Structure formats: C-alpha cells, structure tokens
Image 1 (spheres, rainbow, N blue to C red):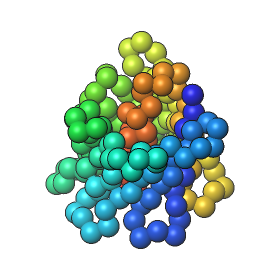
Image 2 (image 1 turned 45 degrees about the vertical axis):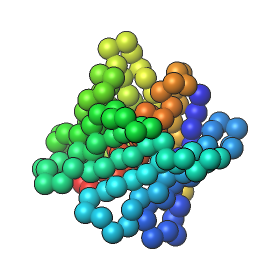
Image 3 (image 1 turned 180 degrees about the horizontal axis):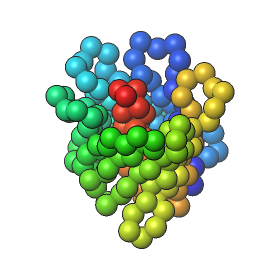
Length: 156
C-alpha cells in the first residue's frame, strides 16, 4: 500500500495533500501559522474530520513531537543527535526510524521487521514523500510520523 504526500508550495503555513495509490485525495494536512512550535492538524479529505494532531514540545534541545490520532495519544517522536544519519525514536508500537546521510529516505522498523519505508522524491516544488507499507491499519500512524519527521527536519 502507498500514500503520496505533497507539500503545497505557495501557502502561509505548512500544508500537504495526501493521495492514495490510485491518486485519489485521502487526507489534507494544515499547520497553524501563529503558534510557538509546530501544531499540525490532519483531516480526512471527504468529511473534513480531524483525525490527527502533531504538537511540538517546547524548551527541548532536539525537536520532540506529541502525536494523537482520533482523540487518543499515540505517543511521541524525538529527533536524536547523530553526526551523519538522521535518527528518530518513536515511543509507540516500539518503532525505530533511521535515514540515509542526506535524510532523503527512511526505514521504519519494529522488532517484527520493517513496518514501512519513506522516500522523499527529488526535483519537486515543495516536499514530496512516498510512504510504502504492507499493513493498512498503520496508515494514519505512518502519515503522522512522516509529517512529524518533516517538521523535525525543518527545525534542524
């Protein structure tokens, strides 16, 4: 299963459109403009219902994000300090995330194996990610993770 995540370039805040593998709109993502730290909302395309929220914790050395889906907490994503490879710790579902040297591709793993892969497509206006995973039940958790990683990369 695949999701395509495309950032809208000419927007006041971080805004993304999310498409399924057939090219149909599935979700849209919108960040609040005037907040301290990131506060990002994920909405279902057809209904406009908020299905996810990503909130940055303030006053931390490295970016940390609290993630909730459909009103319940999923956990936290923390960017870890490393010299060459971006690394993130995800405190739900026992996931680990590691990226290549330039931070363009990520692999999400659990003790059971690979959960999903995240690829950033080069040569696009705005960020464009392809998310591939086998278990459809992980779709929303995976989408929230990708948006949090993109926000963490913007923070440095």
